[in-house]
Length: 125
Image (cartoon, rainbow, N blue to C red):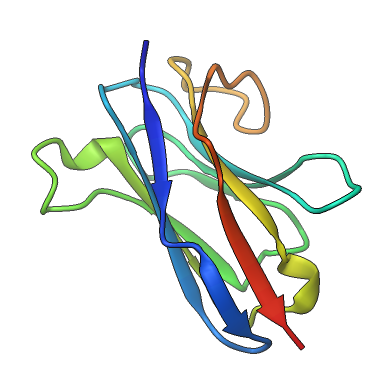
């Protein structure tokens, strides 16, 4: 079983930036994605990146503000790490952000089988 662990959530003022990352315990060779769930709402897709890191997909609500990348030279297996850089944050971005991974490198918005526990991102107005 692959473990996925998120880090980097927190509190930021509207217009600010925040970076969240996640590390998988093993190579998955498929898309990694971020989803979020706000109180009282369903979980929604945010962004995804393929295994090679050369294809990304973003929800319209975050396009142009969020950037997803793969790789961390500090990690022994860099491709197991994905980072979501969030800029121009809005109060409506407040949610628990979940990282997910899968073994298939297609359909970036669905089919994830490995999930993290989530990290809280709160944007104050």
